Image (cartoon, rainbow, N blue to C red; front, side, top):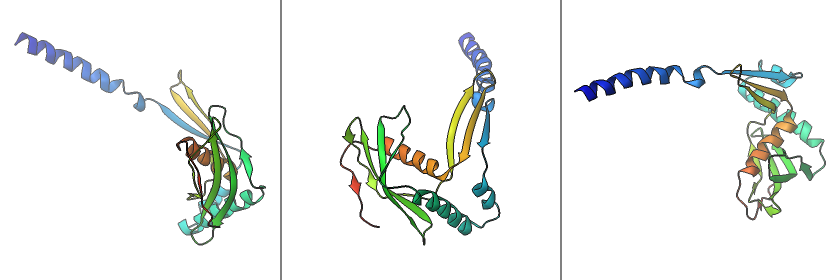
Length: 171
């Protein structure tokens, strides 16, 4: 009986401490926008169908300015590099597809092109910083459709295995 009492006493002391020490309840998350946000601002007055069209048009406009294929600047921590061979936005479905070729440590990555992204992204990550003294995550983003597409495609190719790529021919 004495052991049971001691165990119950220990549990009564430990459980409340564990609940109070939950770090997710204390951490603050802050998002900071860098630069102007004309696309984001215009979306607030649009229906979802109109918003999809605005996002597609913004991406289409920026990506048409590129000469294909082009190498995407991969972050220093990534061992995977890639190039965008071509792209196409679909008018009916309001999505954009990208044909990519990637390598990791000199070996081909098994991508499956086209890679369709829906909705077309406009928000690019600039930085993500944790301040342990203030227990705050600060995420800085900016409106940049090209950079947003490149970041999503970088995540895609980083997560694919090595192997022969499949490059679809559908225009």
